[in-house]
Length: 493
Image 1: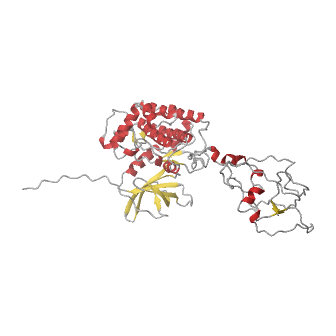
Image 2: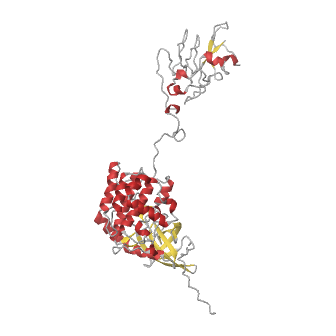
Image 3: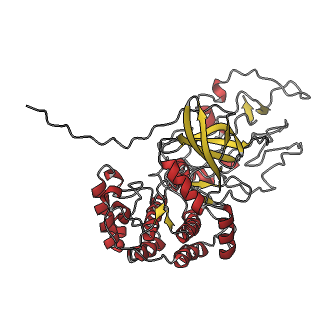
């Protein structure tokens, strides 16, 4: 019996990745201009990205970026054609002037061409080089941006979308990894929307689902229209909104279902059908402006031109309410104003956290001696004499009594009650002679050699005072500034 012909199987749409080209390789674009490759700076979806500079102009900063893919790949060819149509430098400059915008977040296109290396043919495209991407900054800042920064980025991205839509295109893949900060002077605080691999002309005809283009873009952000394979301008605004929500709230409700594209699509439809209730449930702390933004997006028609001015005003008003200028630095880190110990002592009261500054005792001339002048005191010393820790003094008479606060029964000798920590004065730091003699380091246990002060007769006298380093009392535990080594009076029997 004759064999049945086998069905032809379609080839999978698989793109090859290029081999790495050596640093210093010279590429010539279609206009015969030469470019020198620098170090590699990353990888795109289907190719390698290199830093570059113009041939003959040595520039260590390599201010350009060249994207290279194997010639048989298709994405770079499509992206190059989009750049040629919408990223012309003259068109961008003219549009900025008409809108009175200083910087527009559209990448600058410089050229393209083909290159042969090691018997392989490559396609390349040259554009301006940019800095860090927002996705990396998002991950490095505990997956959250300050609200003011989110609003500033939103305004800048809406300007870029306005320009792209005016050229009859949609971007279709707005996300943190495709949003880069500028490197040139004056553009460091501006966001540039790059990677036009999925950009295409938007539809204004009948809304018809296209199964071949269904679920296009990055699943967690792609719009409901893109889930059905239909490119629309309102879809770009929906994609932007999901990015803003993630930057403010860290996560999106469908992030655990990304492998099931239809399930993600159903959750997004539920969200847009009733934005108020859905956000109350999943984003209870989100700013009110996001309610207003998604309320507007959900009511747009598929062929409607977005009200760019209204959307920008939503975020402009929020910045005014926060008293933050629209221009200025983009601060991506959230400053934590909590006490540095609160992360450790979450369940403890304020009384248990030592204060940084202990209350300074009130000095009285009648019972305290200046620490800068040497003085002799005859007779009985005052009730609470302070002695300088830096100068030796001779004191005749009975040792001054050192006052100590009343201890709570059961409190160890070397521990200060917690409720008195912040109010201890210098007079309260040391023990009384009686307390100290009872401790293990007291005078009764001291082995220090007895000496007679100079200039006195060798006759039996009442107890005299002497400065001793070894016999200095231990400072009570719990105090913030320990005065180890402070000289004190010692009674010699």
